Length: 270
Image 1: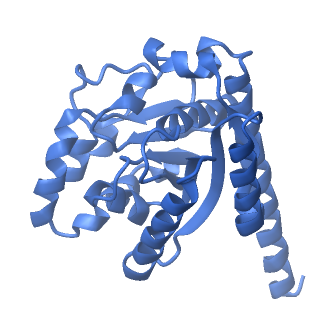
Image 2: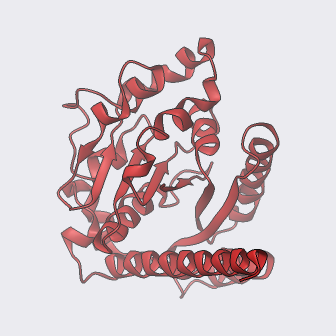
């Protein structure tokens, strides 16, 4: 079964969609099957993955409303092992239409359960706000990755997001955990960036990824060409940073699986 990770931040412009696209591509390049779920009506993750949001037959909207099965909407990308459940402006109507639906907070979780066995990772790109779409993502996910800039208001926004995660944990998804905090658009020459980075490490310790995503022109250019940075310019600092992040995640997952296996072995007395 896939590990399902929501990428969320209630503040826009923090590199969330860039992270969703490039992490998915990097995990796919590491020979993992990855599904990127675009849950933002802007459809930026869809377009940035090379899929025309205006030419799709079915989208995440149709899946949430129940007009299409996930398998009917999921599309391949230019990269092997990298698939997208696309989005477009139709998704804006989902907020209102879900109000009258049974299990409205669980629609995405139930949909992804149908295809979870086909992937190693499912990444959900959330909208930059707390609404029914974000709640669906947090209910469906096992954990939340939080991309964030190291700037003045970052910690305040982070506190609000953690409160949201805690409320979802209490009401709908008790197993929801914080996957990690990812420092994005990072400029080591900026003193404030370094100060906020140090505070994050102090407060969240090993939940802060060692990998840092730098400000990078090629990374910023890639979405306009409908490509992950790994295809647009695989030698760029941005592409290499996301490959490093994928490697860090895979290493942590391997260690977690080994630890679980050892505990199970001890419990069984073998």
